[in-house]
Length: 413
Image (cartoon, rainbow, N blue to C red):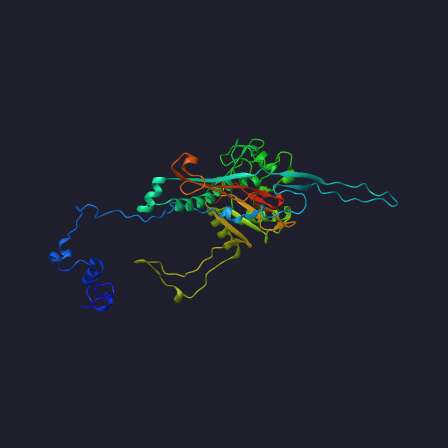
């Protein structure tokens, strides 16, 4: 038997040697195969041998939950720390023009009309804070280095993914209930339920629990829903009368009315944000509205295998629409329900005077700080034998054109 440079026999599985000889040559190594009758024959393992049957974990964390955050993904992200608005308007404020002027005229030979002034109101928002903090003990880090354990870096990577999930679930897509913390005292990024609302909704609609709203529940920034009716979005609600079925007639009527109300092209510059339940209904309604049918010869019908099972005979195809009259539908697991199924938010995707009509604006660079082994702040500085990290965002949902947003709520399937 020839030997290679390493001194091991040149025996490969593909060279005609048996599996047993292949295992022996690659695993036994320098131990003589004839040692004491053969090593493999003497190593008889069973369930009584300590450490023989172990549960093996790879040092990876697999998230055991749905991490979808589609509404957060759908909204335009603006970095105000790297961009500036034209003029003296700050990133967290703008001036809203209200009360359009009337048509003026004069009689023959009459005097020039007096100048008319439309309303101007400064709109101001508060930066909101979203943060994620992680702590891993020094012993956990040592274990990660010497055995199959998860270390700080992977914990941190997963924690950053969870921050996006939390912003969507607990902030943007959370519902407003009667008596909730009002805007001035709220630390979390503002929910679309406050951003897209109206004075009539606050006065006459009910929250997801069926309770009437308190005055101020739907206030947003320095907008008082009771008096600042110019900041109304187009909200179609059913008051305290319960739910109504989502039909083509209801939704088409809503879109047509919104199109007359809004200064935005609803069929080109708007997206639908809703839940997967309502998204499915809208898709079916769109298919029904367009009369989708499958036409094929019976010879095209066949079954497909799924594992060891087979499907029924038929065609592979779909009549599932991803839009309604060209308006894209974005489903989200955290959608707000004011009825039996998720409500429908219409959000603009274009700009007004060069700025996004609706966006999430970042007012400072994301802040990251670390402490622990090998960091500028060590164990003596923190007083804990832990590796720690903090990620902090200062941001807010900014609506620069209230009339460009809509809400259809109080729905059933």
